[in-house]
Image (cartoon, rainbow, N blue to C red):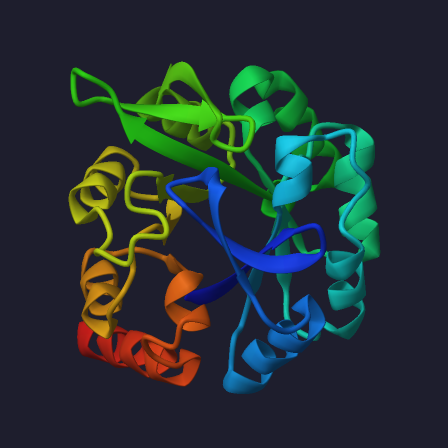
Length: 250
């Protein structure tokens, strides 16, 4: 599945480079208008991120995202600063089909599992924002990518899969926003470790060939942010490549 992403800071569309809040590029247009554009182009799911709240959870949820949910007619997954029962319930009640859980998935696994039991495992996407350490092992970063948790990606992936949560969104922070290509080896390794996991690959996609490579390597979804915002290719073109690879695989 091709999943367009819209990242929001102070109610405006932005993209960061490698998760750095000091390296943000703003884009024109409202979140609602962009979401409608993606819907019309054929998106089957859209990823919205409240980066303001990811950095500071004391802030209220983005008005721009709340407004966008009112015009959405495709499933929306929402991430950014989701920390409490009330956060999860609020977004689901406001129209999100899934919540994307990042920091708390690392710091409080039991809380996330309580959400899965209360709201449904199919409502939870575990967000894994990773960097390679000096031993070339992937560790998960938290708090809007600002802190390294020291927790290994493999531990988190296997723990949640064992509890029946299937969907994972993995971002290679070093590739994110660079348009230099995704970390194919990372995603191959994840699939070999957890073949039944549904993995959304995020970070670095800059060409249609990148999308084809991810599909060939059995990714279940591809997050597209900067590549669409900067017109490297259209969403229709991305969907066509994905569908072609799906047909070829069958």
